[in-house]
Amino acid sequence: MKSVKITDVTHRALKILAAHVDEQQQQILERLVVKEMTKQTPYIVRQGDVLLERVASIPKGKKKKVPREDGRIILAHGESTGHAHAIYEADAEMVEFENGERFVVSESGISIVHEEHGKIITLGGVYRVVIQQEYSPEEIRNVTD
Image (cartoon, rainbow, N blue to C red):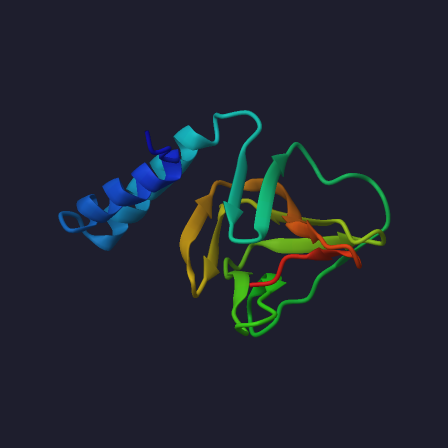
């Protein structure tokens, strides 16, 4: 039996509904679905090699605000394609600690956009950013798109 992720079912259902509702109604439906999904504990979303884990708050410690590139927050650059996992919401902010750990904060929620993946929508909150890594005999390295 083939395993089906809830997000796959959700995206298919939204595509069907999109043909029958306007853009504003579709956005409302997407937010309602996301609201139900975030009731899961822990709430984790993944797009390609980028994973976001919802956390209660940003840890204490020395951190810096990560600047935007062309008006967007870049979660990860694609090494081989030149594409990027990006957030465009104006109220979103990403901070980085000295150890490289990064967190994204948004009151209104975020949409993670990438040219080769479906858009991922979350509700407002704090999310820890994790880049998938792979092992090779030479080193442990980030996965590249």
